[in-house]
Image 1 (cartoon, rainbow, N blue to C red):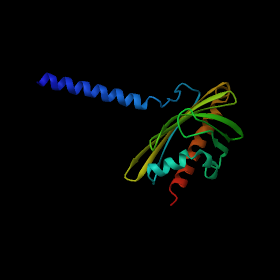
Image 2 (cartoon, rainbow, N blue to C red; image 1 turned 45 degrees about the vertical axis):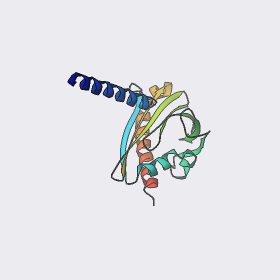
Image 3 (cartoon, rainbow, N blue to C red; image 1 turned 90 degrees about the vertical axis):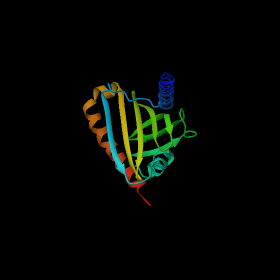
Image 4 (cartoon, helix red, strand yellow; image 1 turned 135 degrees about the vertical axis):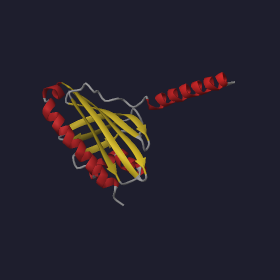
Length: 171
């Protein structure tokens, strides 16, 4: 009886872990070997639902994210949907890879011979949401201007998080 119980627990745990891995397998990892990468975290005094609503309303980004213009979601908010936007004068064509409501949001993007992977994670505790963002950029220009791109990405990510916080904490 004891052996059957242990076997049942082991099988259940294996199935649970396998299920967990499959449910999270669509989150594309950033390239940790990319010449340009950044990770940032901020605590927002708002629910993950509110932060999610602000973050995923791509067509409305320019109303609160002052570094972005002309954002346009080309379909439904789901993996494989594309969107176009401008930041820093560059036109970017992006494709959603992860849309897990109130938890995970991510996309890849291409511009000027560069490729980026961008991931957001939300974790709510006691009405506050910790938002973590990771991004990597690779390609010819990312290698060539590694130092300045890393500085600019660091500043840009912090600004994006600060603006997201302000917009998400509005009543």
